[in-house]
Amino acid sequence: TLVGDARINLDFAIDKKRIDVDCHILSDKKYDNHVYGNIRLAKHDSLDLYFDTNQLPLGFINNWTGNILQQFSGTISGHTRLFGDAKRLELAGHPKVDGRFTHHLLDANFHFNDTVHLEHNLLYLTNVTVDDCHGHPLLLNAQVNHDHLSHFIYDVNIDMPEANQGFLVLDRKQAPGRIYWGQLYASGQAHLRGGNGQHRINLNVATTDKSW
Image (cartoon, rainbow, N blue to C red; front, side, top):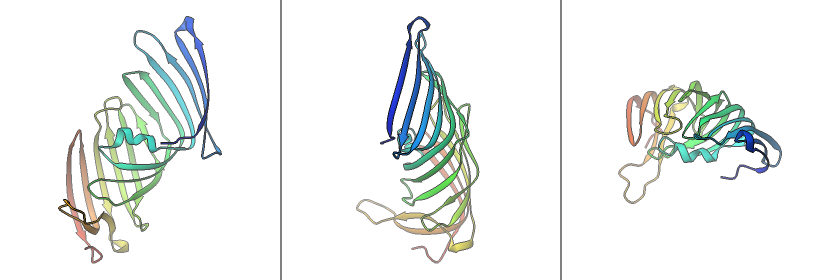
């Protein structure tokens, strides 16, 4: 994923076994993103990097979120910190994310623009409005636990209102080998949880007349 053009300054402090980092990334040829901090070279390598972002492209996170959602695109703005032992990294911050994504079981496209909260081994969203491709909204609360950016476990609660003839949940075209397809517009509640290759979905929903 192309993030932007970068100018990177590295200051090697050999006596302190440390590399100081100062990097400016110009995304979309106009938005300056600043990354700074240090990398410590010791028995256990560690880093402490700060990201001051302004509409930085986020497609690269598909490397970590492929089991939860797919084809993620969008931007991140705000302040984020990446730190810790190189094998036990932590994220902290409350950046604003404008994102689009889908899920391989649904093929429908979704969009949200809200704050993502990053704390110790935890990512969560609270009362976030997610739109389908028609602009119909649902309310989402989500929590993703992880073990230092690996072994992701997610728990998602969704509330789809009855207005606007339902929310487009499924938008799957017929293809060889597929056992289900069609368009599903729904209202009601859904609870999704899983991770590490296992997924569970509990539904209390009603379909609308637009479904087929």
